[in-house]
Image (cartoon, rainbow, N blue to C red; front, side, top):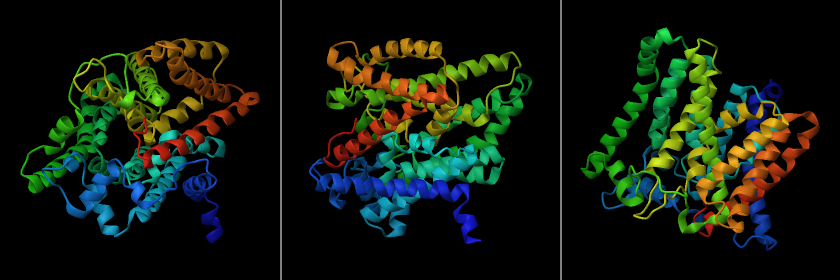
Length: 423
């Protein structure tokens, strides 16, 4: 009986992801001991960036004079209940992420361990290995996707409620679910689709928002203080985009990750537009999970373009694009969909031309250095992935893709604990 459960697809995927997360830290220590990396991971170094706010929240709660009001409460509450330190919470997050990964693998019925590595080695996945909210969001997001697939509406309601208590991007799911409902049914059923969206999907999300608003008001005496803090401290207010998109500290050598993240978000918009045309012609549309995931990524792009800070200058700073896009179960689902297509040389050339036009939005053609570090890196990653998908004889092409991503993942963690802004 024990062997049966250990050999189940769910257990295999869970242990695979858990082993990868543990190996990630082993590699950090080994590379630091050999002098390749400058820093060993240490508890006090992990309290960097947003970890400090979560740590402050779990110890002291909301403070109207602190930017900690710009964060949701569920993760700090859970951290407080566990009585764990920095290392304990980091390991628990690896467990949460691994559970979510296993749920997603089961939902998508993906048994190819090479593709598991494609997912796990994505550079932003290291956020799941530190005391950030990404792991919990990933776990409940994966449960939500499973509930949609299996039509388990009680689990769906609960997972949607918790996802929306963990992080504000949970509210990107409102238009995503509306798109899934409408495009999954006949145009004659628009009214019923909107009604279903209301009580199945939108209600738990709005309930979670209302609870978070009330908790923050009780602690600070300020209504909607989360949004005010986000606007005042991080400059997340509506502005028209200023081009080319830039990054904090003009971090050109890592700007490719923001660019490629936003390209995937733009592809999600193209996908949704194509589904709309099929829907209007009464033709079958895609799997609801893919439509839902594309809808979420499409909303991420709207946020990045119109609500990223400009700090009073001419250009928009899209730092954090990779966090909002990549370390999400919805990105994993959409990448899985893209990875199961067959690409011809014509497709690859077409994508190459369109992508290089897109890189211009990030200033890739301003100098040779920018072209190499923004466009060339992204082009090679896309080419490697598309070749891997195209034919069996090109399956080897995923090796440089995975290898490069592992190196970047390890490197970005080093930046995080330095602490330098990762992107």
